[in-house]
Length: 267
Image 1 (cartoon, rainbow, N blue to C red):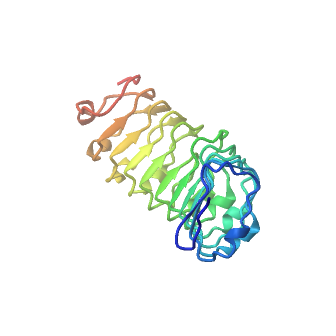
Image 2: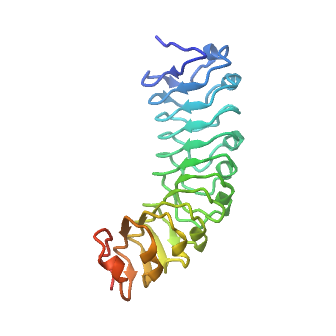
Image 3: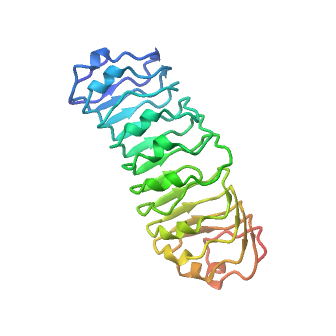
């Protein structure tokens, strides 16, 4: 038995719901704020009647088989579509969620990082695109539209306008080329994870701008050049540089630290 009311979330998780989902009985609940539908087998889009739930701000559709568009939900703030079958053709309707703050598409079938319908949702604060089969690609400048972003888990991006970002994790992707110098303009960053990519060239100038940085990992790339002395003045708690092509002398304050890992370089 499912109990739903306007004052409490509707839980349908682990109900073995298969095929299309009917929301007819939800339509009268205009004040419904949360629907939980994870771990089912819904394989079509949700019915347009769901858009009558104009107060809905939390929707969890993770672990289903969705591939198509969603109804218009203007109040939505939280949307979890993890572990579905969305491909590079992300529905344009996603761009209508102009109040969305948290969005997850991890473990889908996305193979292109240029996703215009997502990168125009300027209200986003948290975006998670981890564990998608992205192909190697250049940096999409449109990601710079997300000026309210605080936490970002995805692949290539432009950092120039992301001035609220605190956590940046781009590990285990197909990133190539130099680390963008615009990254050093995000002075709010506390954690940067760029390990296990194919990044090359030297570390960007302006590392000293990261006055709040605690965790920095660029291991398992193709970076070269020397370690800038300005890294000695950062409040780092963890530094990983191993499996790169760095050369020259390691700054003493880094070499004597118990935290950094510098293996397979030529210091």
